[in-house]
Length: 257
Ligand SMILES: Nc1nc2c(ncn2[C@@H]2O[C@H](COP(=O)(O)OP(=O)(O)O)[C@@H](O)[C@H]2O)c(=O)[nH]1
Ligand SMILES: [Mg+2]
Image (tube, rainbow, N blue to C red):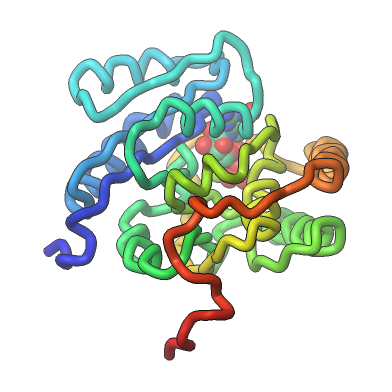
């Protein structure tokens, strides 16, 4: 049964998708079912980023049957970050959540995240036990170290595609990344603004179908994007907006067990 603390939440869940025809219907179906049980109101916004398979058509069919499913189509691939930004811009609920369209996460884990928004601006998932090959985990480890070094942010799993935040965070951070660096950008900008993030372990599964688009070939692009992000962040002056958070700064809070 849904605990009372979850019932008031209104959540937009953004799913970026590129060529996920084998997984998308299951993932969207599960998202609807899970958010229906956990929230007062929700929508699922799928961003079909120039898919060349039937992803777009499948989500169109789902959206016809289920009004809480919406879809944005890009005629050609604009990138993961561009897709997320478009999804956020189109979404209408006060809380924003994003995850992947391949079934590697279970939206039920959002149940542990929603209550934490009572005293945090963002809740960042980290994959407790990654269902990825060793080589992939090694790449991610290097990426996390680099993010720490280049951007000075310390998070356990910066690219974990399971993040929940208040819409006001989005208004404050003004994201610009088109690629995967959008995850690092979100965390870095929120950090620079003094917003408070909590990290929560989430479950991670093998893809339900299809193949990952990330591999060693993605490394040069990831490095370029991180470097561009570092330059953008250092040249953007960030001012702390009063309205970004209704909660008190971490330093002024009573410590909790
Ligand atoms: N919009 C968009 N989404 C993408 C792109 N590449 C991957 N995705 C989506 O991002 C999510 C994660 O991608 P995936 O290949 O599974 O990466 P991995 O989980 O890190 O191995 C999936 O939902 C993909 O459909 C892209 O170029 N554009
Ligand atoms: Mg994946």
